[in-house]
Length: 163
Image (cartoon, rainbow, N blue to C red; front, top):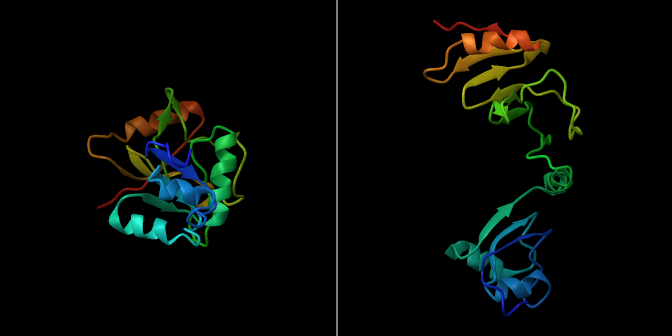
């Protein structure tokens, strides 16, 4: 495998090992296009290829790395992991399969006990301070009435007016 791969592999591992060992063999054989890792490891080849733009390296903190793998096993498209930030901000599409993804209570496995502070979607920015949803801003061409209609689905919003 180490000498016959085509150069299009994405590897997901703790690190890229050392040259000639494990994933290091694939890196040496130019088989890896992207590495999703917690650190490069003791592989100077990975670092050189990254600097030259020959390999894409996505460095992910260890805890987030583990949660992403765990979430993928559940079929989740994303996760929320606290990493020392004071606010939890989620960027997402507002709907999936015609249904709102903004729900009063999560039915999926939680990756944090902390509530979400702010949701940024393609249509609006919604704040969730003090247990209430506040429509902070809408995208150009999006009308407030689109969010007021969510009331019939059990969701209510305060509207923050700007002058």
